[in-house]
Structure formats: C-alpha cells, structure tokens
Length: 177
Image 1 (tube, rainbow, N blue to C red):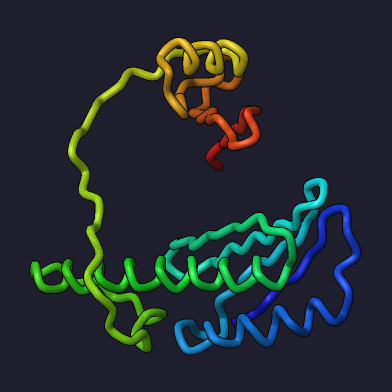
Image 2 (cartoon, one colour; image 1 turned 90 degrees about the vertical axis):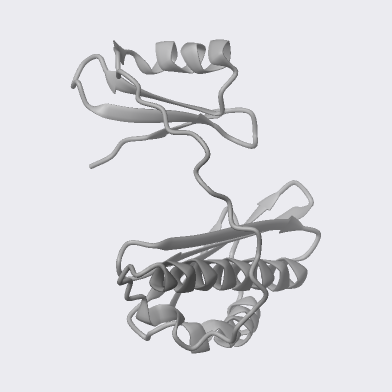
C-alpha cells in the first residue's frame, strides 16, 4: 500500500514518518500494493490529530481519525479503527456471497476471520424531491429539520449538493462531480 504522509500547520519530522510507516505496515496484509492511503497529521491546540483515508479499488473508502495528546497513541487508535472497519466490510461481503450475490473484493481476501458484528441495516427508504436553493437556505432548512445533512439543488447551476454539520459546529458542502 502506498502511504502519502502530510502535515497541516505542522512539520512532519522524519522520525514521525518512520514510526507511521512502521506501524501502518501491519495493514499491508489486507491490501494490494496499488491502493493508497492518505495520512494527515495536524494539531488542534495542545491536541494532536491523526487522519487516515484509504482509497480501495472499486470505490470503497475507509476513513478513521483520532484526536489525542500525542501522535503515537493516535496512530495506534487509527489503526485499530481501520482494522474494525476492514473486518466489518469483510463480514458484509461474505454475508452477501452466501445470499447468492457475486461480489469480488480482492483487497480483503487476506483478513483473518473476526466475530460477526451487528451490521446496521437500511430500516427506512425515503424518496425526496430536490428543490433549488442557495447553500445558506439549505443550511437553514437542515437546522429547521434538525438533521445532520441536507440534499438539494444548487439554485445557480441546478446541480445536486449535500450540506452537512461538522463536528466543529460549522458546515461542510459536498458537490458530486
């Protein structure tokens, strides 16, 4: 797996890069060499933040982040979170194969079997009509509905957009290509 290490508002020293590479080598058995992982280090006051995003072939994305008082502990916790996600994904894929569906996901062939976790199911399906509005109107609508996200049409380009509430209290905007 290719590891892309970046720092946001900090200098990522060679010692931290080496520690990260050494620890993330544990995940190599789960992935092919072509797959990439972005690893970002940043600071928030006295806290250290480690963010990891793995882009798998087929479009699946695994992501974990940890805020801690040191980067080393953050790396360990991010790896643990990624392993849990991998096991969960593997269980889902195996369950679908048993149901007669053909799913090929070579990236997880090497994972050891774990306990089957309670995998969330889709409990409700809802059809909506996308209405044209500005980004600000969408944020207001999301707040009025007390939702964490809101899908709408941009009133200028008439393209689908999704606004969501971030952990820091601000908003995020997703614009599909």
